[in-house]
Length: 311
Image (cartoon, rainbow, N blue to C red; front, side, top):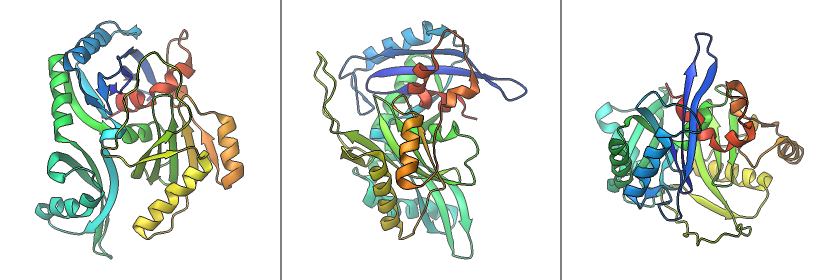
């Protein structure tokens, strides 16, 4: 289940013995402006009512479980991989806090942290740890919303982790992953299946005309770039920032594009400019879904698919 400022979406995936994924239920419901801002739920009762309606009246199928994996919003969560000294387990938290505190716009005491080891380097006396952080208050609100709708959370997960799960054959590569939709755009650097860094991209291009005033977005836990630069330039900036921070040169093997605003033409252009193989991927093409659903419609809900594939 994914919660955004504009809508709620949920899907249920069933896997056959052969490993084939099938979409058995899916739906989304729009939210009024201001009900959710940067992932923070401002109108609890309204969101609860909308979620109940979504669960009881999906676009297709019927939800048959109350177990849920929910996404943490890009604008209000933090995800990175850091290197810390090899240490005893009781010291790991303190080492992580020391490493990530300068990067967090809120005090670390106000954040809930989850981490796991991804690589140990005993020769260097170091270990790599992927860290996810979100405001404790935000997590408490999400848990309350799920409880009120009789849902049991299996996990809360950063959107980029869910998106990474939808791509096959990248666990031995360094890739750039761009997800570009009308409601959100992000760029992430992923090394051997592990997210190294992730950033929101916000365009300064004129917003579409609407009868509702749009709330201003604030930077919470994810670094946000406001730019009108083309994607090749943004990719170069992302790599330069990573290399400067980590004092380490890195070259992606491939670039992956996904989302409702991406296509094969965009992939060809980036390949020509950066000379790095770039692919447009539609994760839903590997999933069986009803014939009356336009697959392009589903591309706006790639995060939801990745959450449903959680193991």
